[in-house]
Image (cartoon, rainbow, N blue to C red; front, top):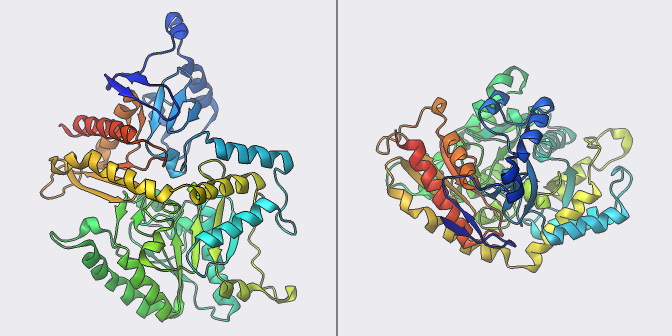
Length: 480
């Protein structure tokens, strides 16, 4: 038995390896309150990133309420949200401060067209983002989600060069194993076959260079040395194609959907200098890694650089509402600033651009960073994450434990010495996912990589609980 002190909850008892019990009234009546909601869902809803046939054997979980790091289903069972509900939740579910900000906004304005109109929450949010972001990013273009932000950045870069008369600059360079979203432009500059391969005939051609993914470094080679060596591929590609390239797009420090592979900040420093030298834009996709995930407010700050375009979403609203933003500088902005008849304006639009409720949630989220020692506290939590799984470093099926700040990943392999991977069709990660749910935790491995990306309000004891559940799941999933 394990006693678990949940954030803002009384102490509860969870039997590791067995489901939590139903509330007493439902237990007496033998009623599964989840079942009806599940049946109604499966009759009508098509879920994202899911082979729906899996739900013939894999239970769908309807969630009734959530608070802090805990989700609760209709039977009263709770689950520790170890992945921030797809990397979006920073300060816990039902956060009182963000709740209050949305309620105040709701009483004044829910939404208004953002073409020709504006509102206080959008203006304040833009001002705050400019204060927090790397130097030179002075303009904010709002959109609805991460993929939309990437689309905006790609189009804005292409259109910028066109407005300057450099019409040859229409290609993009991307890293192998990268992921930037699933709309067609974003998908084209990604390189994860699971998402991309089917739609290949629909996608524009891009230039793909080897990733600085440090999992692939030689024994004894440092992250910085390997990243510098891998940069030679990028330098050669830029030198050969600069006249045709609009921008390079990267996920700074962590390729999240690409199995949480990581690299050294020095690669970004080299990349910024090379983009300047070859007159090519740098797009930093910090949709997943921004807002403290890697240890600094933005991952680019660890390299001391400013991109030409910074794409933000996910944690921007604290996990509450869809919102994204592309930040850029005055030089870009002025390239579009002209008489209407020149047809140089950037005419990209979304109906819910600058939604007032989403902006209010984002503003409240950023104010928490302003008013509380979030990054300092995260450094302590990140150390606890590392300590909690340090015992797995010698596990015969663990090839590597890697970490940037509040993102930690454990790579599972069939053979530790050769790093032979498990066959993806064995779905080892799914076994860990099932085990974690049984034990009251949400862990959603990517292939054979178990990762922790929890809300920043998680406690050290809750981190230890996640680690114990993950360790048990790894043992069960790799024992044969």
